[in-house]
Image 1 (spheres, rainbow, N blue to C red):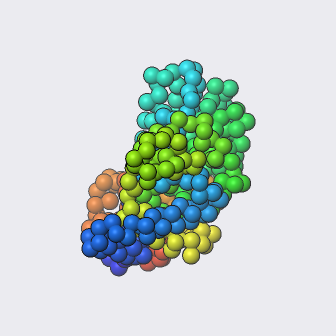
Image 2 (image 1 turned 60 degrees about the horizontal axis):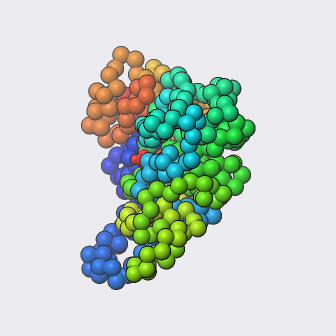
Image 3 (image 1 turned 90 degrees about the vertical axis):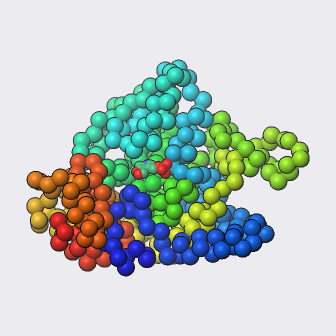
Length: 364
Ligand SMILES: Cc1ncc(COP(=O)(O)O)c(C=O)c1O
């Protein structure tokens, strides 16, 4: 992680630094694209397809259930715009979801869809009973972040899936704050849709994202963004034949962000090599250490740190200090964190060492 030379980078929940292998892969691609144009296009496609397979394997899906889109929002919109809504349907989500997990649903008001935004406190806690109570027979979709960006609350996805499905609803998971850190297996946890961009815990660049759609839903959603790459004979430009690919790739209507996807491929490769279980263990260890040290200097930990809901995100208050001022002072001293939720937010990755936490505490 080249970033570690200079910074105690504790902000992976914002825009993460790109891994060394990710940077190198993109540099190589840039050299090729500048020197050879599209001569090696087939090799680029191979790399992109390797990413599709790797992402599929890492979440327990099949490659044909994976679309490589431009960001998390695109995945959310594919579902919001594509579901066969009926007047009076509702979507259940939370009031503290990232805006991209709210606006696409709110935008369905003109189609008669109600959005139920469950209230949560600063710590983001949501008991299963309250989620259950928000759903009824008209709930078509439950849309939640795996890990809440503002407070780090990590949902138990098995519980959430059970509640959604018991009400006859589908489950959408915004996985951007969990993917790369915590294991997930859609072949065991019945998630219907999932989306995540690569620019946080996957250590890739922006605008290279994964969208998972369970195979059985492919033909129930009206695909959005249909273009030349959506059809079966995508290289036969002369014959217009609108037969959509029988896979999630139908959502990839036009030219991809090849540089970004190639960078993401190298970063995902690195994470797979290290292993998600190890990464999760270290992220929880380093965040537990940070909480202990923060409490030691009088900070109030806002995030729920119970083992089943703790994540890589820790939000805290520093009584008597303005978060924005503290953040700037930390930046001046080489420590990167964010102002989010009820105060300040740190989000260390597995490569952050204990000295990074020492530097944070010294600054504070
Ligand atoms: C929970 C969550 N969803 C989505 C996003 C970003 O979405 P996109 O990849 O569309 O930029 C963020 C960024 O902070 C986020 O925290």
